[in-house]
Image 1: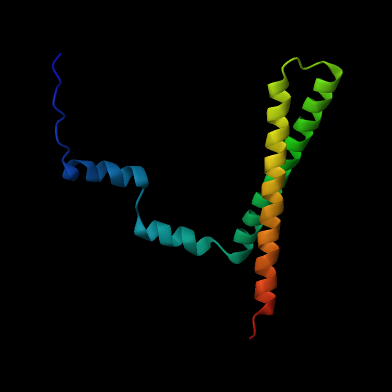
Image 2 (image 1 turned 45 degrees about the vertical axis):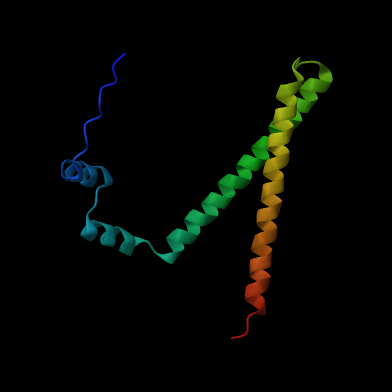
Length: 114
């Protein structure tokens, strides 16, 4: 069984393809960044938090349905219910820890002297 050697790559041949993939245009990037204001960034962050909390809520509801299905005998396999409950538990724990970190950062900023 013969092993075929790998041909070396020429970096000069990859440069045009790389630029087209990344879409590097310094003037275009500056224009795009100039259009983004603080209100837009704040709205995007608020939407991100809202989406994350909705996902945590959905996981909690799935865990409730799984535990109810397990209790009523609708779900035959135990591992499906346990996995759903663990996902919900981990997501809620992460959310609570994130809230605690944000509150700690807020209190730290409030303690700063101007």
